[in-house]
Length: 196
Image 1 (cartoon, rainbow, N blue to C red):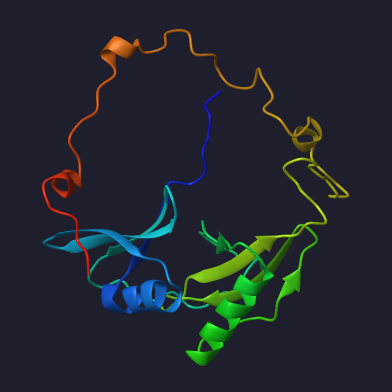
Image 2 (image 1 turned 180 degrees about the vertical axis):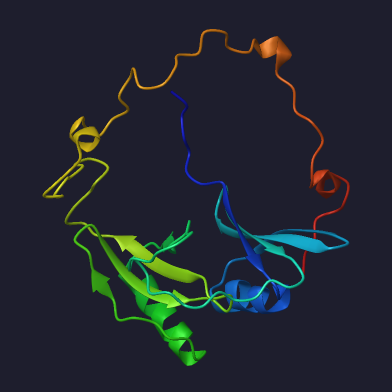
């Protein structure tokens, strides 16, 4: 099984990169780590934590989505509910709540979810966001829980990966054949670092 290190980046979309930069860099405080651009679009990355980025494609014609309350059911085609960003502690939640309110953004009161404390808001693109920190009362990494009163048979198999449900790899690619191919962003290697 692969060893996971967390999300490297999430890729979202905007029709207004400048407004997106003002929100995520200037209000929320995420440094701008990289910017790629070519005719028809740009892609910028904000550094959330070392090795973790929040990316935005800017495409002409993209409009903010209508706000949908976090975690409430919906119908029809749908793939994304909200973006939850971890912060170090309670003081960070209150700082972000105060900053968002001062800037005129709706933000919830802090909510206790037993394993996390959270506040909820929306970015200028209508993306539902949650800022959250771990509660010391319950560590789901050390002590996974299942309180669903009607879990499916698949769920009852346990927390860890269950073998035998997918074909086994019978011919792994030898490392001598591992190749990568040129893609977007290679020009980042040719440009000096951007500082201001």
